[in-house]
Amino acid sequence: MYASAATMQASRNTALSKNEAMNTNAQAPQKSPATALCEPCSGIQRHWRKAPGHAELVQGTHSREDRGNGQASFTRYRCDRCGAAWEYENNKANQHAGWALLSH
Image (cartoon, rainbow, N blue to C red):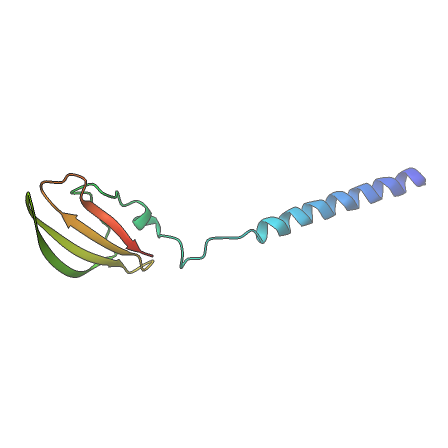
């Protein structure tokens, strides 16, 4: 009888540890949607001229600046899905212009 009671107690302990593990996983901290970039924004290649954006970027303001080696244009965008603010620099003299994440 003592052996079966020990077996039952061991099986209860195993079940409890499984439940604790499930609760721990369920309560693990997750990035909130407000702080994480959406999947399309995460895929934008930064600082590379002619890299594409994505369909949910809404165009904002546009400006031009004279640089020593020519003119550069700057266009701001905001993502409709995650709210990230982007700026695209088009500068023919700088291959590493392109997309820059301003805020999120």
